[in-house]
Every structure is written in C-alpha cells, then in structure tokens.
Image 1 (cartoon, rainbow, N blue to C red):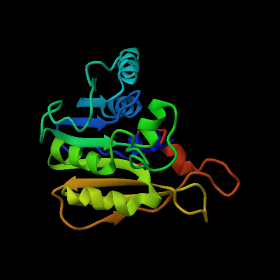
Image 2 (tube, rainbow, N blue to C red):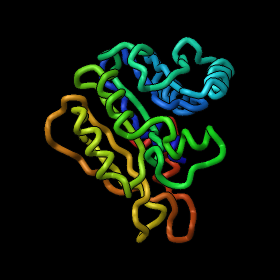
Image 3 (cartoon, one colour):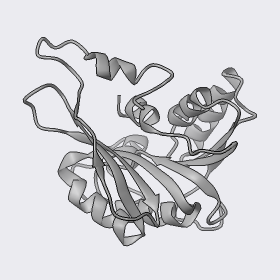
Amino acid sequence: MDTVLLASWVRRPSGRRASFVELGAATGAVSLMLALRFSGNFRIVGLEIQPDLVALAERNGRENGLEDRVSFLCGDLRDTSLLPSDAFDGLVVNPPYEEPGRGRTSPVEARSIARQGSRCSVADVAAASARLLKGRGRFFAVFRTDRMAAFIGAVLRRGLVPKRLRLIHPRPLKPSNLFLIECVKGGGEGLLVERPLFVHDEEGNYTPELLRAYEPEGLN
C-alpha cells in the first residue's frame, strides 16, 4: 500500500518536460505508475541495487509498453558515478524503514535491503537525493511516523526543505504509522500539513480517500 500512496502523492512540476528518478525502485511499480499518470514529455529512471529486481522491473516496463519513458539502472545509490548531479526535476523514494544494524534482520536478502536498510541509511538517501536534484527540484517520500524526527533532520541537513506533509492513520482514533512528505531542494520556510488520511473507517472498510490513491488523479 505504501507504494500506491507514494505514487499518488507525487505532483509533476510545471513545464513541458519533466525528468524524475526513483531510488530503490525494486520491481518498478512506482516508476511505472508515474509514467502512466503523467503523459507527454515525462521520463523517469529507476535505480535499484538488486539485479534480479532490475530485470523484473525492465520486463514490467516492456509489458506495459513504457520503455520509451521508463528505464532502470542497477547500482548503489551511494555511487556518485551512476547518475548525473543536479539533473532531475523530481525524485521519489520509499526508504528502508530501519537503519543498518537496527531491528531484527531478515534472512531474505531482498527483504533485508528493502526494510532493514542493510545497504543504505536515511542519511545516504538524503545525500543522494540532494546531489541528483536540480535547484528547486522536488523530493517525494513515504516513511514511518515514529522515525519522522530522524528523517526530517536528515533531509534538512542536505538542504531538502519540507513543504508538504500528510499523516497516514490505519483508522480513526489510531495513531499515525506512516507519513507522506514533499521537500524542495533549497526551498524556503513554510510547511503545509494536509488533513490526515485514514486507510480504514470505523467498520474496517477502505475509506473513499484511500481509494482515490488508486485512481489516475491520485491524492492531489
């Protein structure tokens, strides 16, 4: 679900052309959803460290007829030689929810990389994002609410200024467990905190707002 929420949260910058990058693209779901949402001169490259997932993402792109707008690259986001600096209008990322060495390590490597951050930290993600984005470029992410302070501290240290925030709650009266955030590289002060999004209503059904995330217009 966090994948769909992230893709639906992204806003395309104004202008005829838009170039995006996704860090930790996995099977390419977010990149492909964005390419379907944003027609015209929209291009996105997904960076993923696991070769088998890159191969699957490329296959997904071919099967959806999106090879002309979506590409995938195998590599480590900490490698500064893979992608050009100051080159992208927007960046999307669903970072590992745990720092390296924290939490119970999964015996499955793919899961360990995705969730336990066995190969990168939030600080690594922030550093890579700040390097890749153009000035005033936009950064979109989904992350765990209980680690919000560490996340915001990491992006601010790299000049990525939070401009829009939305808390995700499992249901009314339950604490938030995820948040969506948009930052601007070199942005000024001023943060919009949007109304909360509830995944389920009091009867346990998906809310109309959550279902909007699955529509082409997304949450914006």
